[in-house]
Image 1: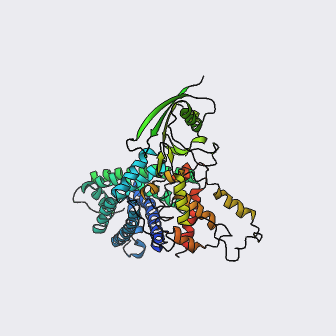
Image 2: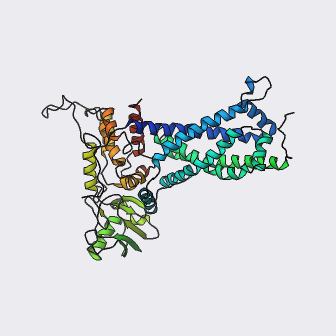
Image 3: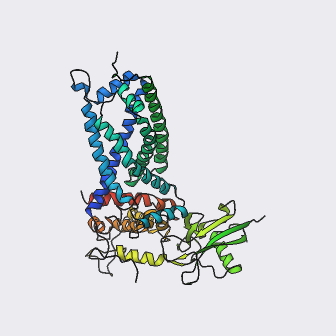
Length: 241
Length: 241
């Protein structure tokens, strides 16, 4: 007798359809899509520092709802609220994505054995997406915890965090990992649901986006470090002319 | 001038308790238009009559000679030795199937079990059980769509090229979903989307697929696995909305 016995789960002996399977798959894709699109916007918003401190300052005030304020200053609590919402979305995404992880040693061995005998780029891509996804559990949590506990953003305050509080150490690791995971995730979700079947085009766009955003993010980070190096402690918030 | 080509072939007879898995090296002179299948026959006739591998049609129709050639699962009869400029060819049996011996695997047993489990045959409508009655005419477009999916030769390449299938034994794989999609679009079949959901609307079916696309990239018949699985996923997800 076989060591593995498959217990029949339905009247016909086949597997059951489970509403939760569909829900989990939809939730994983929807939360992934939200996070991926958020990443695209986030990268551009924070890169506005490349256009000068003034531009970044006004961008932050606008995104924090300065139009509803009598002082022309936004509300940092907006950043806090968005960070909490993003943390919830990340948690849902992580929980649903965990279904995909090879959770048993046997599955891990099967995966590694497969990758050593069969050459397939998209499988290797998925493997690295899984590894980066695992690392993002910690990196995203650290990033969002900072934004929830200390939501003040500004040309000087952000630069202080990056340089004087050594957050650059986190971002140097975070940036390539989140970009790879996010853009490859968007590529996969488009193909997964058949939004487009033009795979070569989607793949090319994904490659270009990764390189472009990596350059954009690195330049922004260097700019924050440069600003941070020029700041004198204790740091005063930036005041526009 | 003809060149010498080398074959590294996986050898193991699971029926022989003393035998251990090993790689054996063979050399032969390449001839014009030589396929891996022709080379294997030549090796068996001239060098090693104990070499085990499967074949029937020699023309990419029966799907029997599927094996892993230099890391890519494909049909030996459709693979020219001239495709390998360095003249080094490594042959492994398809992973994920019961090994009969050397390069021969029991895809038939797998396909039969899959067909019984997923009920991969036409379920006629209640008023369509009279075999003497003329069948209703089918629109040529529908017939063409069904024919496109009927081209599957059950070679097992999609199963071997799928890391999800290697990690999760009960996953139905692209061949199962392709056949379900074929009956789902057949107007003569009585089953509804709900019925199919009960068979593949779970982690072992369409919601277990991780869109690694090994099936799409390796299918020797170029079947549209990616589009079909996406179509089924949308269809099955719609049943819970």
